Image (cartoon, rainbow over all chains, first blue to last red; front, side, top):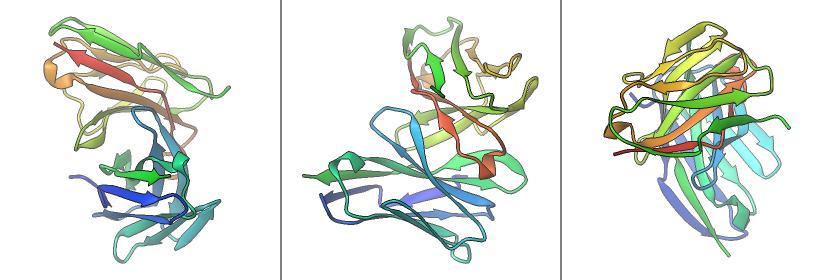
Amino acid sequence: SQQGEEDPQALSIQEGENATMNCSYKTSINNLQWYRQNSGRGLVHLILIRSNEREKHSGRLRVTLDTSKKSSSLLITASRAADTASYFCATDRRGAQKLVFGQGTRLTINP
Amino acid sequence: EAQVTQNPRYLITVTGKKLTVTCSQNMNHEYMSWYRQDPGLGLRQIYYSMNVEVTDKGDVPEGYKVSRKEKRNFPLILESPSPNQTSLYFCASSSGLVSNTEQFFGPGTRLTVL
């Protein structure tokens, strides 16, 4: 079964606004990662948050993790046109060397 | 430049004609994997390798083969391609365990099977 599920599937905002994407998962994890994909291209790693962390920052990105609710959120502040992309969360499964991706959130930043 | 390369980038073929998609990384990574990306289904892992001569099935291995004879290379083999294998394929590598290490992705191979 799909481990990570992103919400919303698509998000369109104005440049300068903040964008929030959510990810839910079903089983216990060691860590959760977020990736960005520009149209049809390879994925680029954004940030990794460990299961014992609640929040992590990287530049304009803020990721939170709530293991009790099995959910994570990715916040992009002061969005730019270059942030237009699809964003995926990826989780591991404890005891398995597999990374499972959600279906992604397609983010569009309007100038 | 540290990178993962895939070839070919685009391929149109016919049902049953064996093909190989190559993947190579220059970062001395131990872990490599293959994913396919389909609309509405996200990325699904096909096979992965934790080191030379060590490979294992992912979530959708049927119809695919892999080999890991050298650390840098991890080719994906479709011995008898079928139209349901039309997809966008990505190779990825990392220096350590999947769970706690950044994955580096190749640029993708868009495969069409007629």
